[in-house]
Image (cartoon, rainbow, N blue to C red; front, side):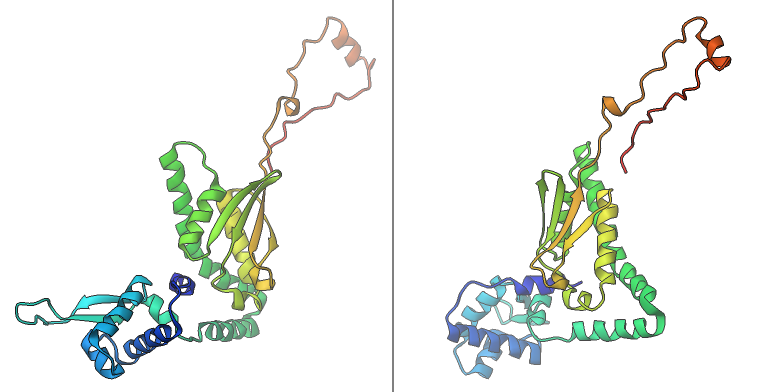
Length: 270
């Protein structure tokens, strides 16, 4: 699950259409020819190096290119030669076939191994995510020294993974919302991905959860309901045993009373 794709999807500040086209051309040249200096890009575009640097500044601010010192390049006593290269976010802004590749692979798995094999692949894919989020929850609880709102911590951890997640409390429990799904197109055909992800969420928050909506099924947000934890109250607890009055035991043994005493067991959270 590439977080770079999420970063690339974040809109850049509005720029004039012509400037946008030039920036796209700059990115295209960096993709086609690799790292280049502003002078090299200017020569290929037929514009001034100063104009190229202005576009490069915009791409740097958007996180789509980075700047590095040219290997062995020191121009006399001046500044070392600088070259510009695409970042992962810059590359991900170009068309790719990751979804097609994933679909082809899972269709092959489903054809030869059935639904359980697809589920195993989904669980394997999410194992790393589960481990990182579990570490985040454990670290938050250790730092706080008390039990924390796991839904809130999990939302923050999922956001760093590219899910743009939030958690909000509701009267009957909590709600975890994921505003982005990196595998939505694949999950639309293979719901095992959503099922495995729901199982991970359930394990991390420590209770059974219920998926109310998913982006893969056409909803705007993946919404997971987290029910409120049941806390035992005084009424749930068994009353302390009362001493038996003298003579009652004999009557009971003699069968004077056939009523079976009820036992009120303490309820524990599901």
